[in-house]
Amino acid sequence: MSTTSISDIAVWIDSVQIPQVSYALCSISILEERQLTVFCAFSSNLLISPHTADDKENIRLGSKRRIMQEDVDQTPRPSKRLRDLDSVPQFPPSPTKSGSSVAVSEASEAESHQSGRLSPIKQLQLLEDLEEHPVVFCNFDDNEEGEEPKEVTAMRTAIQQFADGVGILGYDDIDTVLPALPPIDRMRFKHSWANNVERRSVLGSMPSITQILDIVETARKYDHGSGVSEDEWNSEVQHPLLKLARNTSRHRQTLDIHNVIEPASLARSALPGRVVDYVVALTPDPAIKQAWRSLRLLPGASIKSWNHTTRARHNPIAINIETKGPMKSWTDGKPQIAIWTDAWMKRLALIRENSNGQWPALRLLIAQGHDWHLLIVSKTDQRMTIWEQVDIRSTRSCFDAMKVLTVLH
Picture 1: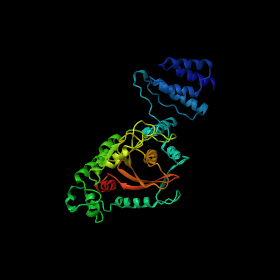
Picture 2: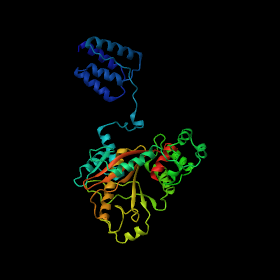
Picture 3: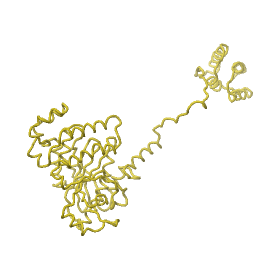
Picture 4: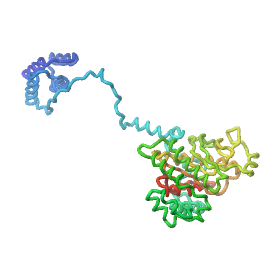
């Protein structure tokens, strides 16, 4: 840099009032050593506010000379007003999608329902890799894990008809319920194949349209925007639907609905303890009460229980139901109900004493928000297979809610 340009810059700096001592000391030090660079001058210009017309003129002249002599591409910017940051409220920076934040988010998901340490995918892999009686998920008609058992096929076929809306209604006069329905439901309720009084009455009685509408309207309200918590969804939507199904079922005298709050015992040590939200259990009849007297203590506990948990210990579990909020992942529900069912089957094997051969097919239900899904379990000496899935339908409309109710019946 030439002597002429240094002196010009020095004149310009001397003519400017410097508001902060730190910048003044920086400029003086640079001038004394004759190492002032264009970058330092431009940086100072961004931090120092001009006060007179002469200051502005000096800035323009200095800028032109530097561009010509140093061939610099940058252009000086107008200075910004300095603020007293100590008097301004400070807010934390917005979170970014950093590696650490992603890891924290994944860790939070992994801890759902006391899974503790492992992601849903990792849990599914552990279930598949168990040396003794692995637990495998597969699709219907998938022969990779062996031929689909006939009992599974029969159960799946019957449920699929209800999921398609065949025979889900049982009204002597369908026109009496239509006025209370929304327009689309009115159209769907009039499908000829949907109403079959004789077939439907075998399963249970028809609930009032008001009861179904209340559940559907609540579900739609709770799914609006960001929705509500899973606990609210369960207490205000899923549990009322389960109670309605039980109260209108032909088996209402022999069934109970229980909420499960206790992790299963008998779970494999390599797997986290998991719970499901609800079980349909048998009300003890004289035969069950008689058998209770000779029942052995639950392994690992000092009390008796028909189940792999001390919750509802007098009521043998018939159906396991896992419910998730609409914002939760369907994937998380699969290992959750699989680990629970694996421990449940172990308890049944201890009661049965002879667990060899083919077990009867058993039903599992997973509800994710509005949507209900049926899975079917088959068990052999080699493995437990969970066949998926029949999409039963949802609580988004009265017609689809009737499908769920019929399947529950």
